[in-house]
Length: 383
Ligand SMILES: NC(=O)c1ccc[n+]([C@@H]2O[C@H](COP(=O)([O-])OP(=O)(O)OC[C@H]3O[C@@H](n4cnc5c(N)ncnc54)[C@H](OP(=O)(O)O)[C@@H]3O)[C@@H](O)[C@H]2O)c1
Image 1 (tube, protein in one colour):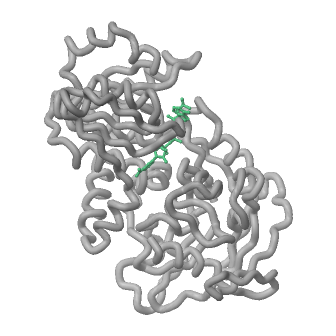
Image 2: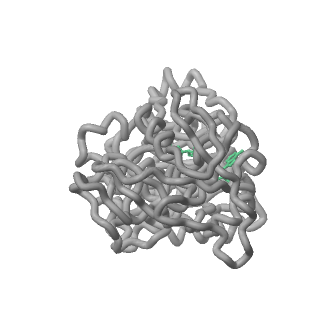
């Protein structure tokens, strides 16, 4: 992780005609504030030597502390690649990073964003795995993807096939990978087995529904109640959800009726925490596993003693960033997973989450929308 964060700093190297800031590491960061973008002009500028980027100089509310700035790019070294960003989502982890509450934080000032798809424009003389025109995604978190262009090392990027939709490519490296790992690594699941999850309309949740359906698994999908629940339920069912219920319905005794139709879940996936997680646990079968990957409610997970003693449930956590770090020396682990996901995309079995595509100049609106509840849509910056 340290190397990724260093890389992020490295992408902010010195250039001409700029204001100077000194990193604590001794690196120089030179930025100039960008004049307001003209409506209809695309809102951003990019040249072979510079780019526009969403920079935060202090932690805080993203709509207050993130600014669009011009950044000069370093020259392309022998093992470097210059890329043009094509699209980058705004994920909860990115928001937490700007807030300063995420598990890994870059040195400030920093460019926001951890995920996205870029196109290679220029490669250094010793680059062997990439060529101009290739699509690439970050190998790891911390690269700072909310920017029109960047110079990155060859090693920090992974090529993606160009025959998948842009929004799928932009959102592939985090949520679908998380969903696939959680469905693969914690319980030996067979077709007909049941998985229960909360935050089922999240990016992760939508990927879980689709990957599970492709494996013949039944999914019970819990979402927060809302006026347009029926529309949301229909949308998730069209993706392959077996059953969609509200948090409130999950607490009702009649839920037990459901398990006359489906076997009790072997696996529960928790992206919320608090009471919602406890409810998931309650429905697990003996020996089942609950994997916590997110804490959107900001409430701790409470585990009933009986679930541990009498039902022998396993309570685990998962962090895809750690998985990538653990498999950093096994190239095929990550690329094999991406191949599997791209195959599902080509077969029409895995679509991108619903995305609102937003031009970089409209970044404040996108940041605000990304923090709104009940949107069921991912904000994606397009460049
Ligand atoms: N551990 C990992 O490796 C890993 C990887 C990817 C993502 N994550 C985490 O997974 C979570 C979801 O990420 P994402 O990109 O899929 O999110 P997303 O697409 O932005 O969706 C956010 C989800 O959180 C729900 N939510 C928000 N506030 C909530 C609350 N107070 N109580 C209950 N539900 C709430 C939303 O439901 P409504 O529609 O009802 O608002 C929505 O389902 C985040 O915590 C993220 O950091 C973890």
